[in-house]
Amino acid sequence: MSAEIGSAAPAFNLLDTDGNEYNSSELASKKAVIAFFPAAFSGVCQEELCTLRDTIADYSAINAEIIGISTDGRFANGAFRDANNINFPILSDYKQTTINDFGVAWPDFAGMDGYTAARRSIFVVGTDGSISWKWLSDVPSDLPPFDEIKSAVEAAG
Image 1 (cartoon, rainbow, N blue to C red):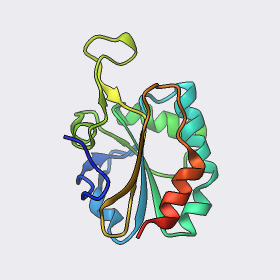
Image 2 (cartoon, one colour):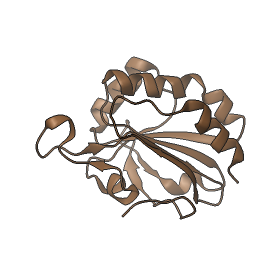
Image 3 (cartoon, rainbow, N blue to C red):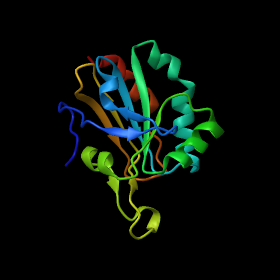
Image 4 (tube, rainbow, N blue to C red):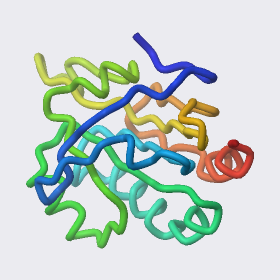
């Protein structure tokens, strides 16, 4: 299954870095940037999430939330959040249900047989809960097009 532009964003209920449940219904009536990333503490993931952190005021000004999701455990995500002063929720999809629902599972990631990570990808969700824009990386070292993300959020309903 894959989450397509125009379709409703798959619902999710994941643990944040403090062990609290975060339900996608918390995004109701807001625009959202959902950033899937492969691994906490990898250089490219750090650059991606820190770039989003540094522009969070721009997204808040247009009623948009940023959410990061990886298959890392909440403890690794919490240490990553703290080390990089990330100021938005980072959620743990350790059961891999959400990455499968969005169609961004990356099996045997980095040559590790049996290890599935999230494909670096961005989904913009409008206030109606539908996906209005998405970007999927074919190479883990690619960074998302940050200017396009912001434009997509501005254009989202």
